[in-house]
Image 1 (tube, rainbow, N blue to C red):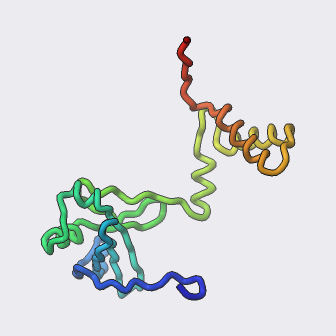
Image 2: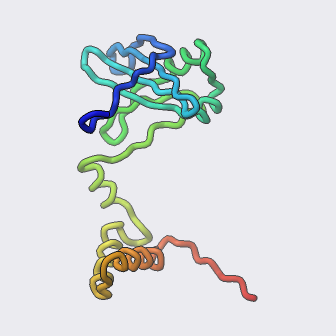
Image 3: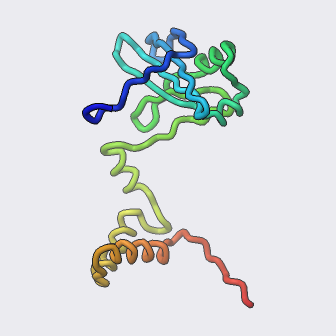
Amino acid sequence: SRDGFLPTMRKAAIYTVGRQLNDGEMYIFSLYDLEPAGILIRAYCQSTSSEQTTSPTENELEKAGLDRSSDSLAKLAESYDLVSKGGTVFLESNLAGINPPKVVPRGEGVRQYITATTIGEETLPELLTTALAELCKEKPAGLDAVRWLGQWLLDNNPIQPDVAEPED
């Protein structure tokens, strides 16, 4: 890589097809073999200069009953369409065995996710505020502060299971 940029992909696609997706636009689907990791799928829309990517794993391909034959690759490419989750557009397959995309919040979505996350009766920010207030009372220095905070969070996790220690 040069100047902090990732090197461009130099592999040739093992399968390419053009097809219309549910947004009404034509996409060029290019599938790249990443064996043993799986397959990289790139769907490029020239009219909007946009690209969507996804990469089903080897395990997902096996669960979906797919190999690297032309028929399997055609079935895989045909199974994808656009879905919107959390304001972000993803490629999602309708084949059993291929997992749906995971939504990774970004920007304001991160704040909304953290604020909405509950831990027992509290929200995550409330629990962290309490933890940090306790840390300030103890005043450990350096890495001891990190260790202390981690231990406090473990000890005060309201959703941890109660485990009874066996008696000797």
